[in-house]
Length: 188
Ligand SMILES: [Zn+2]
Ligand SMILES: [Zn+2]
Image (cartoon, rainbow, N blue to C red; front, side, top):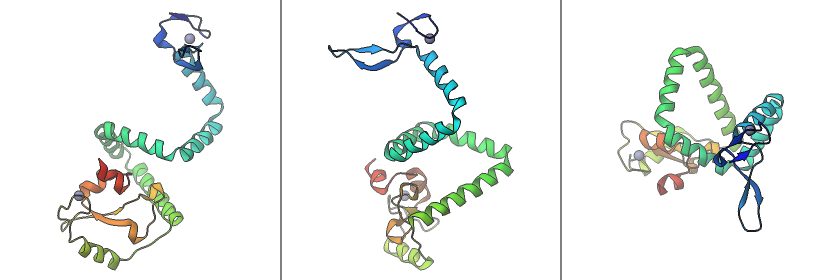
């Protein structure tokens, strides 16, 4: 048990995070404020510093792109179903805003493509289709009915829009690959 310096209440040790301070014997001290007080403090700070918080979050995301992408992938993998259901429900209830959001997302994607550079033609895609023998690049299933154009190294992770970064994938592979690189996707 430990008394919190914020709310002055005595609480179980697990209600305190470990501090960064490590004692000589290798054990670590508990933080002086309980987790509840610390998150209340963070919320208070956030409501007074929204812009600053957004900016530093953005910097963190840029500096830790890999870690963030990984965390996001793990989250989608474990919450995929419920997220899709929630999104579908929201979309049904807010069709206009949904369309507007899709437009914005599309616009953002085009801007990202403009930034990474690259373009390809229909004939590039036809050639690729022939080279791949009308099969999914990843799982070799036939893609005669339908295929997706996949950026092996995703645009969102600075992959280019040139044909050498593109393959044709079955819908299933393309959707489950999501923001993984081809290498990451094939390693799992
Ligand atoms: Zn407290
Ligand atoms: Zn496939």
